[in-house]
Image 1 (cartoon, rainbow, N blue to C red):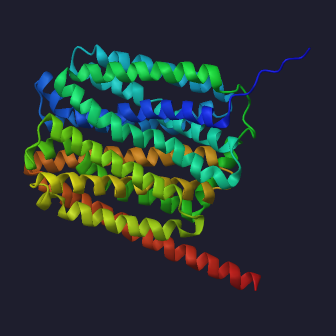
Image 2: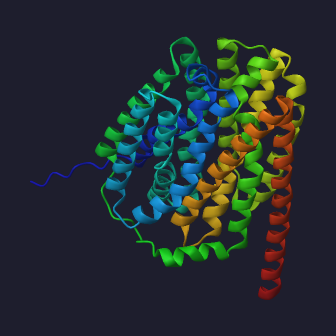
Image 3: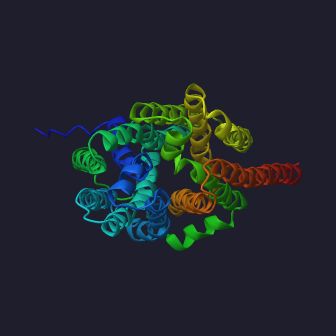
Length: 399
């Protein structure tokens, strides 16, 4: 009698991948909620502690494409397990970091698996579902990140205040272990459907829309991180929030992020660029008024919600645009897309640190953020016009 093992459902596999992306997203974003706690512990300025955000994001940019290129030809399961194993060890290193330098090194190590894990998991998830559900699968993977923002950051900030910032990294290590065990149990060990020919994959950069998407990500999105990196000290300073207020406001940001991410997953392909332009206009508006209304606690929470919604309404749109524009280079395109987001993150945190160090004023962070996002808006408009021109030319040739 031949008894076949029942394959775990696609939903369960995507759920396990979400636990992993949640842990990875949590470790990236949690630092922003505990900057004050880390700075106090190591007796350094908050703008110096902000370098942890830059170091993490810069590591993702550099290592993402390299690790992906090495990993992309190997069977997916051992690669995902290996990457998750490194992640758990790096976060345990953060828990026991004796000084700021060791903490920074552990963050760089933790970041080294980020880009490759997301790129391989994204492609893996999209291979499991029919083409019309790919946008939803990408939104689910991003969902792990968004939930990390919604629950992870405020809860991390609360724990950092109530116990110690090290407790946050301990919880992340435990979550990583759960993800690791889940991967062992439910992810099938199969070869990639198509072994990507990486030399062919680089041709993806010949597509104008792919290049536009990367440029929009780097410029438009760094505007978000100029302000968001320092959101916790900003809210303490302007709205006078304590532990509970900060937790509530960061939860509102994450809730906005979930709403934005959900909405973006529903946008049809042909409306992607147009929707992106609308979202960026909203983001500039929120950044422009934030410092003026954040002095009122209720308004600060509402503005933080809108900031999250606009900030997280953009990534699924950009990622879907990249993957749909790159017919045969999805793995490299997905990896470079993750790198572009993190370059924006590193650039934003670094520019924010410079602005804060130079002016000593949080208001200028929002002005800088709005200005950078405006550059992204200009590029989005060019991308839209270029798309319309391509469609027109195609119709003329066809006609």
